Amino acid sequence: MDTGELTGVVIAASLAVLSFGVARFAVRYFARRRAAREPASTEATQSRQVRRASKRRKR
Image (cartoon, rainbow, N blue to C red; front, side, top):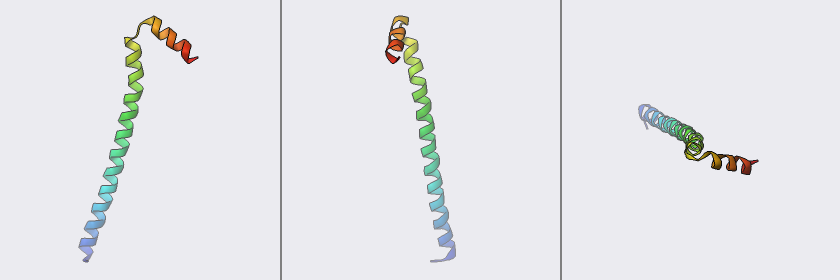
């Protein structure tokens, strides 16, 4: 195997690992944001009575 071929394989492998890491980080980041936003949106659509009852249950 030539040095040029070996260099290309190493570069391709490192780019694949790097892109996998970036994609995994992005998926976790957006999932965390979505999970943080959902309770607020469901609470906004509930009546005050339901919100107070759920707060009492959480205590």
